[in-house]
Amino acid sequence: MREARAAAVRDRSRAVRDRGRRRTGPGPAARNRNRLARERADWTAGRVRVVRGGGRLARTRHQLPAAQLTEAQWRARWEAARWFLRADGESGKRYGNETIRIAPDGQVSIRLPTPLAGLANAPHGRYVLTGRAAFAHRGPQWADRVAANRAIAYRIHHDPARARWYVTASWQTPASPAVPLAAALAHGVIGVDTNADHLAAWRLDVHGNPTGSPRRFCFDLSGTAGHRDAQLRHALTRLLNWARSCGVRAIAVEDLDFTAEKTREKHGRNRRFRHLVSGLPTGRLRARLVSMADRTGITVVAVDPAYTSKWGAQHWQKPLTSKNRKTSRYDAASIAIARRAQGYPLRRRTAPPRTHRSDGCGHRTVQAGPDAPGREGPRRRLPGPRTRSVPPDAERTRATRTPNTVRGVRSERERVQDPLPLTD
Figure 1 (cartoon, one colour):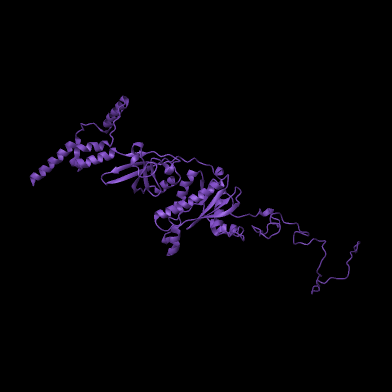
Figure 2: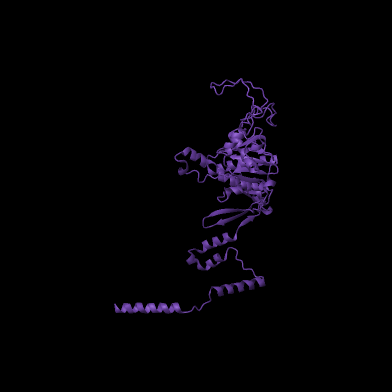
């Protein structure tokens, strides 16, 4: 027992002495200064230290047992890391790249050089691979660029550990210039109302008046995720093409996000309504529309969604409905969205100030009916008094009834005052 206690005291004292000793090696600051001096010397001499395949993998060759690799496995990784095939894209070419072409369905074809033209298995000296390519990360953005024939760079490399071939797509996204709202709305705006199965759109001129006929772009969000994404992209493509054909440079949408609006605490056990709300592609549509509109030079304006459907149906649905055109509630909501983006009120016409009304401060309707005469001009002047009071010189049309009291009965005698009063 005494020996064990003495050994513990010796170990503790030895640890204290080791902690108190100074370090003999260089510190982190000294190591960084030495490394900086070496890099500056290489830069001055024009020496570039590059290992094709990676310096770490090259050093692993001398430590195969520690890396649990055989020489054949290391050789396969080394050759795969040093070998790759890359081709830069070009805008205007089919699918954005002439050398390595990947179709929207994932088919990969390579343009062979002239010495290898005899190995082509497709027209125009191309070799079509049997495998299909699919992009899990940013696949929708890649599909948008392929559909528009925008430049995309590809790099094909091999992974011997997984025995798979991989293709990497890359592109450059330029910074979008900031467009003033007045400049974007100079040629009118298109209001878009988002629904579960279609997009209701109507074009408005610079004065806030609907022109032409409403348009509807339908889509089906049932099925797989790829099918839903393709349906949404196709509907937005048609919307943007229509906007460009009309010469409009702005599209107004509602700033909706039902991420927190589909919970049971919000709508209770109404599963049907919660499923309908969850199916509205608000977040995906807004992000996709901004991405696709940026390449076409169209500005997307997000507005407050408060009461757009209610006030649109109240003020615009009935006046725009005729025998040849039936305006839906969604079409009227698109007009309200576009007018809010332009800064106009959602009502068709507002009442004048109270002091400027023809009937004083009385009641007056906000919007006259279509059958009211002269509804576009001032009220016509009516003869006679403008108030309910009767002027003094007006002829009485009602006889005065004799009162029943004696004091109120009129006397026939005439009272005359004597000009000279009597005095005593």
